[in-house]
Image (cartoon, rainbow, N blue to C red; front, side, top):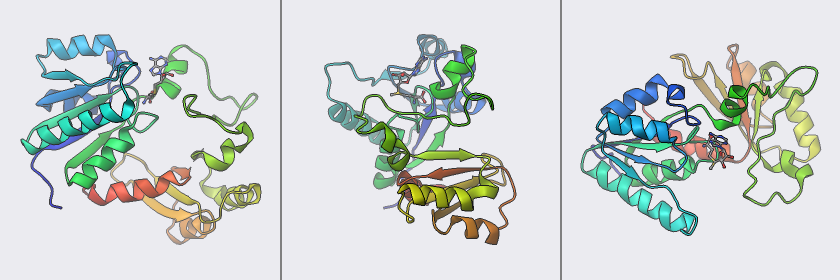
Length: 247
Ligand SMILES: C[S@@+](CC[C@H](N)C(=O)[O-])C[C@H]1O[C@@H](n2cnc3c(N)ncnc32)[C@H](O)[C@@H]1O
């Protein structure tokens, strides 16, 4: 399906303080013809949008509504405005790809052939504790940070490591050992892995692989820059979504 004229920006608004909006988010907001915003976008950000004279539409879910029904309506609006050739900002609390249904909306846009861009936001995951001066890691206390949805039923806490998405920092040179350990623990050797080197910079490079091959592939591709490694089935979705990404 060919790309339509309009474009949708899935924008993270951060945890609430307008000063935690990124410059990129602000630029998208300034250029937007219409902004569809969620419940968790802070009141001060909404006042700011109103002061800017922006055309804003509330699409947050109230507690009586079904998520599926609301999502259909949001999808319908994004599509409608994009087909009118408009620049649409879909403004979401925190970061759009962290428990924010941003991935559902990105997939919808891709399937509809509508151009889109994802603009990361400061996630409440780290933004809120850091603002409250509660550190998340320290070499003496914790070298891991587990982020779990309390809404979905966690069947067995001990299995979180086997089912959830794992994000590894500083693991580039040890990925062979890490993969081996995860496979020993019970993760499928075919589990998809994405390695993102020099993220958000001009030189950003993403390599897709799986647990059994990733170590060799990194060596073969001379991955030497700072890298984030994402392990889990969701990585497949990233690979699919990127097919429409420009550049
Ligand atoms: C559906 S999730 C969305 C998370 C969001 N995409 C992010 O990256 O922060 C909503 C949950 O994020 C947390 N949250 C979001 N903003 C927050 C804030 N300003 N203070 C505390 N918790 C917050 C709460 O646990 C809330 O129930």
